[in-house]
Structures are given as C-alpha cells and as structure tokens.
Length: 110
Image (cartoon, rainbow, N blue to C red):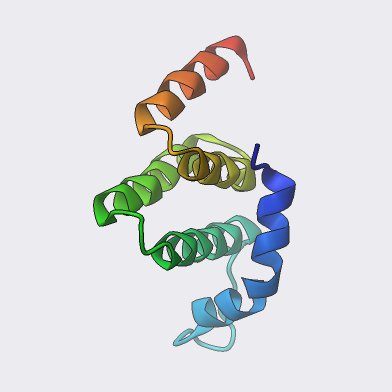
C-alpha cells in the first residue's frame, strides 16, 4: 500500500523546483507558510505524476486531483491525503471506494 513515506521520497527531488515555481513573480519579501508550500508542491507533484501516465483517462486524472483538493481541506496532514489519492490511483479503485472508507474511518476517529 502506498503511504506517506513513499510520497515524501518521490516528492523530495522535485521540491526545490516546485518551490521556485511558486515564488515566480512574487516580490522579494513575499513569504508563504509551510502548509501553503506543502499544498502547492503536492498539487504539482500529483499533476505531473498523473499526466505522465498516458494510459490514464483525462476525466479520471481530473477526478483524482479534485479528490485531493477537496479532501485535503479537512485534514491536518496533506501528505497522508496525497498518499491515499495515489493509492486510489495505483489500485485502480473507483473514487467511491475512497469516499466510503474515508467517511467510515472519520466516524471511527481514524
């Protein structure tokens, strides 16, 4: 099962490039908080990962990105959310599977 540690390992080589892209066009004194930086980097990572899969239909790619953007708002750790989205992608499971399990786990306090 794909997890947070795997995501962090895959993301690490790209972080400097993503952060530089985030700073493009910003004034020199501009600063973002760590969550904003993390969300931006994860978002670009997911987009690039899914776009690299030429067999992934465009509508599924959009739904996976939407799943991350929608779900991450309610969670403290965006890396766990991203790992769950990548696991959904890798497993080929329908997004409904993720929603059902996500809400069951939330009710249990997990």
